[in-house]
Amino acid sequence: MNDSMSIPHLIMNASLVVQLVMLLLLAASIASWVVIFQRSFALARAKKAQKAFDERFWSGIDLNELYQDVPEGYEAEGAEHVFRAGFREFNRLVPKTRSSEAVLDGVQRSQRVALSREEDRLNSHLTLLATVASASPYIGLFGTVWGIMGSFQSLSMAQQATLSTVAPWIAEALVATAMGLFAAIPAVIFYNRLSSIASRLLGEYEDFAEEFHSILHRNLQGRGGNQAA
Amino acid sequence: MAKRTRRVGYGLPVVLAIGVHILALLLTLLRLPESEPTPSSSSVVQATLISDVTATDQAQYAEEARARAAQRQAEEEAQQQAQQAAEQQAQEQARQQAAEQQAEEEAARQAAAEQAEAEAQRREQAAQQAAAERAEAERRQQAAEAERQAEIKRQQAEEAKRQAEAEKKRQEEEAEKQRQAEAEKKRQEEEAEKQRQAEAEKKRQQEEAEKRRQAEAEKKRQQEAAEAAAKAAAQEALNDSIANEQERIANAQQSDQASNNFINLVKRAVEDQWHLPASADNGLVAQVRVRLGPSGELLAASLTRSSGNPSFDRSAIQAVEAAAPFRELQQLDAGLQRRFRDFNLRFTPGDIQ
Image (cartoon, rainbow over all chains, first blue to last red; front, side, top):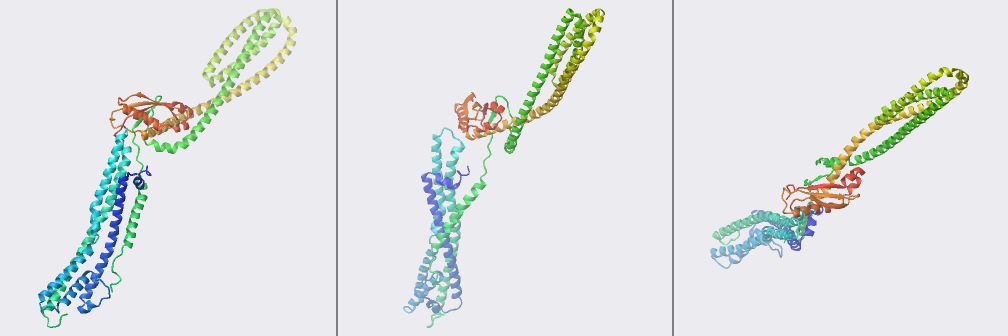
């Protein structure tokens, strides 16, 4: 009784379609967990980097110094990326034009591009989590429905319809739903959590972009040769 | 400064994800066998014997299972005791019968001797008195003995005693009648015979003394034997009656329990194999007569009372056929086995549909 109703036994005895569904759900679950871990680490790191850059930026360091103090081949992330994109554009535009409007427009544009790249990076693979969270219950349900269809088909051939003839079929069909939920529940929870972290980080980047933009604006307004504050 | 953390790799997340799944699988494997209790069997099949109806309750299952080993021992002991008691009884009866036979034979022999002597007396008056006296003495002894035996036997076994007493009384009455007749004859003849008696008396006395001695010795021997037998028999009878009583009680309990036990086993086996047809109502009752072979194999399962629903009837018979053989039958007593070789099972669907 115990042996025949254990979950591995049920999985082994399921029909092919149900087994395929289960395999798909297992893959989805593993993939979602990979994404969960990878995103968690990445976002934690991004948060840390953001904090460090924040401290560094507001420590009163010279912006040129901050811009140039970078190793070769380094691709900045987060707020630093926004800063670097904006500052590079600023440095390029200031010698070419006298119009502060044009300079600020250019800086804003380049910052917007950097922000959108950052947003893309932060939210990358989170859609996979969202897909798993929303689709895997339906996939599991499909497996269950298929298994129960099979059970009723076999029931029509049996002479006596008792609970004990239907029970194994239904049990192994329900395993599919269980697996769907098993994949979906963590995906939903972590999707919400990770996307909220990502959007908060993005908000911080935007705030920084605005602040940096206002600093540049202040510099342009009161400039008389000295560009960097 | 931030050179080391260009990108977060996928190696560690993959390992962790697989670890999570293996952990979940292990948890299901570990917890499931523990958390799944065996479903209690609902009593759907009502089993009744043809010969006796036993009251079955669920609580007895466990109790009986525990006590079964002890019961079996007790059964064996009881059987041994019963055998011993039976042997003792048989021996005792044989002894009693032998004693009775002896007594009867003796009585018959003596009666024959008396008759012969009476005739001889009639013919030979001289020899008559001696024989008469001898016969008298013997008769007296015999009567006393018979009385004693009769008394003992009355205590031992009433029926046998009553017969023996009746016989003995009859014999005694006859003997008395003869004695009276002889005494009358003797009295008439005595006067004439005195002279002859005087002469023959000494010889006769000697002979008589010898005979008496022999007779007495024989008597004593018989008495002793009879007394010993009687005592032993009385004690044995008492012991037997006690043992019988105990045995009867023990047997009754054992057979009750054993029959309950077996009935429950059969019921559960049949219940497990019984698949109710979908069309079965609650009110259906089918009765199946089950005949078993000596080792518990199914000889025949026949419908004795149809429920009116053929598929229900068929399911009941199939359940019995699927549940057979009932090997537990071999563990029962021979007497119980015979009873359980043929019994009725009544099928009534409970609330399982």
